[in-house]
Image (cartoon, rainbow, N blue to C red; front, side, top):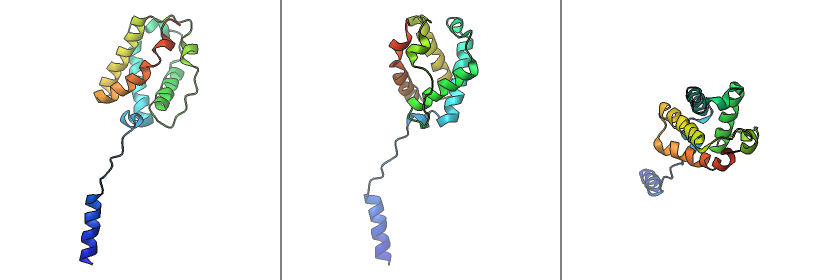
Length: 138
């Protein structure tokens, strides 16, 4: 009996333990963490004179919901983004590169406030950077 026990322990130790890789969705705190992050992000935008004019007629509750949904999906979560394409949303806004960068700064500040690891921040920013051409000067 003791021999079987020792063999079982040896097998457990001999088999490498594969750590489950956390998804970006998990690192962001799943739906609740993403919702909190987007709320902090919106509050940063609201205080930014460089970009607030683009949000004057925006339904803030819907904006928060769509942002949260989109980030949830993009980060590997179970959500399905139900909003319009980035081109459709930003057409007519004529967002400059400087304004785009200001919004990125707002997001970075919000991520710092939420105490997200730099690696997590970089993963999210890398995903969002792919939308740059769909947002600028539309």
